[in-house]
Amino acid sequence: MSSSGTYPLDAPDGPEPGAPSTRDRLLQVAMRLFWAKGYQSTSVADILREAGANSGSLYHFFETKQALLVGVLERYRDGIHPMLLAPAWAGVGDPVERVFALLAGYRTLLVESDYRLGCPIGNLALEIAEPDPPVRRALKENFEAWTDAVAGCLAEIPGLPERADPRALARFALVTMEGGVMLARTYRDPSPFDDAVAGLRAHLAPLIETTPGLAGNGAE
Amino acid sequence: MSSSGTYPLDAPDGPEPGAPSTRDRLLQVAMRLFWAKGYQSTSVADILREAGANSGSLYHFFETKQALLVGVLERYRDGIHPMLLAPAWAGVGDPVERVFALLAGYRTLLVESDYRLGCPIGNLALEIAEPDPPVRRALKENFEAWTDAVAGCLAEIPGLPERADPRALARFALVTMEGGVMLARTYRDPSPFDDAVAGLRAHLAPLIETTPGLAGNGAE
DNA sequence: GTCTATACCCTGATAGAC
DNA sequence: GTCTATCAGGGTATAGAC
Image 1 (cartoon, rainbow over the protein chains, first blue to last red):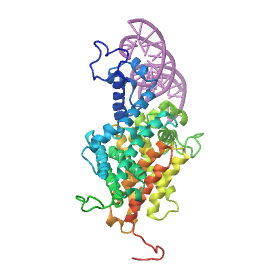
Image 2: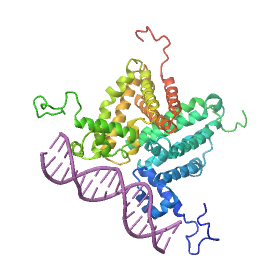
Image 3: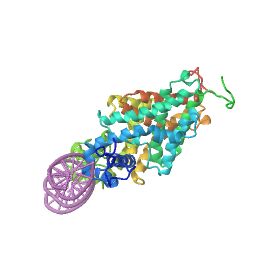
Image 4: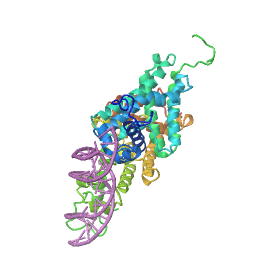
């Protein structure tokens, strides 16, 4: 995994410390392009050009373009906590608001990208129709990690696990997000997404114990 | 629009009456292949082969492959009532149940196609990232027609229009369907779709006047 | 309107020197 | 591990006779 394990302390005149390896650059560029343009519409040549790499390098690290896609999906999965949840949840303690802070992140992304960027996993999930292969597994692992994180929030809500299944609710939140992103992108307008989030909020509301005097109740 | 307007009563030894024209066959095949494989993954050669047509014919009727896609989307739009809603609503009178009968149709499609077929519009909506073009317009018109139909059902529910916006609810139903289809296809399992539909039902429940003695109340 | 033939480009992937 | 050069095939679209 280290950049050049052959040499004792990196090659003399080697890449500056901290500079991403060719393999990393390929993965980073592929993540970005698959996200923005989709898998089929991104050519290997696009990736090579933007990563400043050669064909030989790519096929040295990855057997096929599809293997690169799997690598990208594994990066997304591993990045869910540090790259997606941590920024969205910074300064947000309440578990319910964490769910909606996560969704608000997608809304910001939609608007700031002029509706060009949605959920990278959702795009690929519908694009890849293939029946069996490792790609489906990698997609599933991403949806699972997202669902687990949201279910973890919901399970923290006092009394909720007794009233409803946090995992089923988390999947419903994922469905809401993915559907909302799809419509907002097509309409180039945030309101379908907002309607979807409002619907989810209304759906969760009766499951949350109303604690009117939130401040200062140390114990139940 | 008629098959051969040049001749008084079709060409002698022409195609049998009722046989679809070449243009129709191209559109029908393209609908099926774009649905099953997506737009990019369907080659013009695929369409020509399955339609039994020649390249010259396709480009006689359609300027580009994208123009064919627009033609396909217009067919979907025009087919929503006769091809989608009419079968789903046969024998279903209650407006709420019509909404869920429509969703049940997508579930059946998922299961019977072994999760290969979802919503044809939703697939294309995420695949086509292009910013401006007529394709986006055609996609939007499809979502609008679907939403209008569902909003029409919801507006029939006694007292609902006073309590909620039927169009916002209809869009929420569309979001639920599209997201549910996406997850069910990825998981190859109907339960994410079922969870989504259950969530929608729970969302609508408090908005529906409970009319315990439904039979025999002629007037309010 | 339909046919055959094909232009022309871009695709994913490979070869083999360095 | 990186480089250049390239293969073999498929992509969309066109030409022009019929």
